[in-house]
Length: 203
Image (cartoon, rainbow, N blue to C red; front, side, top):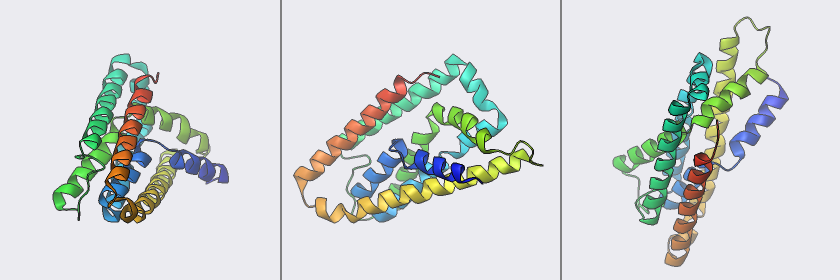
């Protein structure tokens, strides 16, 4: 794997996006354990897009306006729902003393859904992975799987670091209602902005 692949992957993963915002919000709202679960869930949400890219299904997503828009607006609706839940203190910024099994399940579902309902990820991997695949490799598919594994591992590590750092700051803000209100509004606005960006994204 070339240094360019590692550098590009890190830049893509570390750039603020839906998964990073969700993991940070979870770390602040629910603590370190939940933030790691959120990072893992966001990483799992990448798998269907990688499979779609490798099987050529992303090409169908790219050529079919109806299919693309269906997935896209489902993602927009989910992001707006997350924003509303955050404002109501029922979503990512809900404060729980400890993560019950039900809470962990909720974190997993939200994290997976947020990445799953973003059609741009499939198209991104179609354009991204082939650039770093050796055209003369004996098994290009295996090489793409290896590249995908590195991408997912880096996603999990970077998101977990984001979440754990946010969780470390949790004790400094949980006891301050005004700060928590400001944070909830900020994260709700971030989810809303991500929804708007997705809504206006073209294929």
